[in-house]
Length: 178
Image (cartoon, rainbow, N blue to C red; front, side):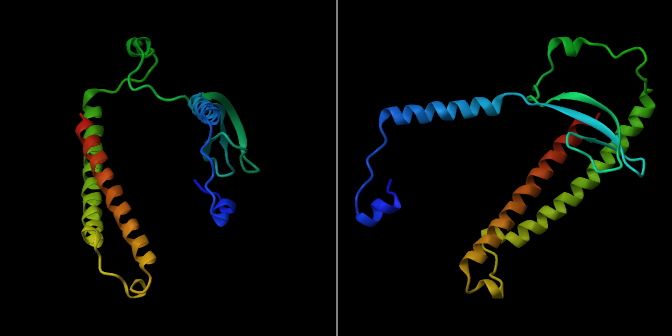
């Protein structure tokens, strides 16, 4: 590792000592531990001038009426619910939906997701054509500027990756519909 001053003088910078490396490792560990801790925020419910409801943890615009606040725990979500949550029954006042109504809702959801999947697959096909396996034809203004061409290829690759992930997520969501 060379610094600008030592590079000019042609001298090599001495390697860091073990104590410096240990201190840096401890500092990195503390930083990771700080990031892993949960964050508590207060989420407030507001009504704007048009009677729209907003939930936010930041100061609202002027004229919004505060309806209430609750504490929020932004800790990581568990992959599986705890046993006490899994066994908890819905309260007796919780509204019940008959199976025919739920089936109708599931059918509508499946139809919407299928339409979204078809649209996303079309976008994926278009993105793949534009990407041309990483070798699209350079545009006239890119012929003299290789960095501009590479930037466009990167954006095209990102678009293909995004659409592939969207298609995968939609297929997974459709499979989960009852």
